[in-house]
Amino acid sequence: MTTSPQARAAAIALAAFVSFGILAGANGLATQQYAAADALAMAQYGQQHVAVQRVLVVGHRANA
Image (cartoon, rainbow, N blue to C red):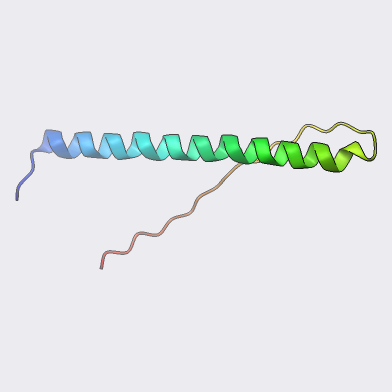
């Protein structure tokens, strides 16, 4: 089966867009969860802390 260069470029662009969206969503969820846990831990000391956490995903693709 052959594919056109346009179809291949569209597939790569869509994959990049979806990957970026997944990472941005994971980053948002991780930051929200970390901030909630940090606020709970710091509450006993009467302190407030701004928590920031980032997600780094390292993948390996194997061609089997």
